Image (tube, rainbow, N blue to C red; front, side, top):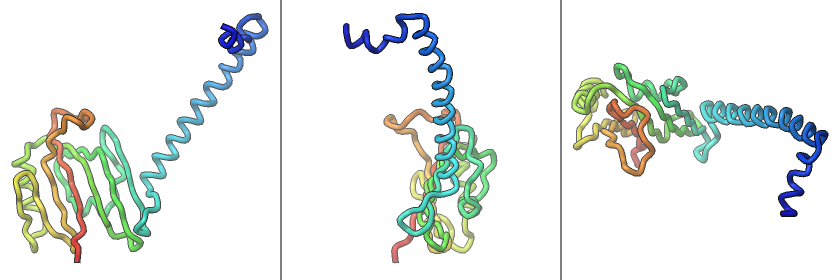
Length: 176
């Protein structure tokens, strides 16, 4: 009891209680504000890019209701899809700002056959995409791009949009 009694020594007297609650009233908002600021700075830095091992930047951006700051080069490569909600962007670039790797998670209202048909029509007319099961692949600018039907894993966290079709875009460099 002596250890617990020393922790609450300020609560024994009216003056001590006043100091204790005044410290809480000043300290808690200050700590909360610092925590929010540090979180905001980390999110902003990750969205702008953090230096990586390739000499470029690593861009990470997540948003349950959609990500707005997708790099234009990535959007150019994955193309537009009607009513798509992109919730996770994970991209690495090299020193020349070429994409080295990418993994993007999105949700769409259509089922997988409609998604596959869309990418069969829109991806790279010079190098027609090929389908292997629940995956569409194409080669663009020396890079293999794929879009997958992402079946939820029982080990993954719950999907933010369980009523929509989850698709995953991946970019894989072709080894020479």
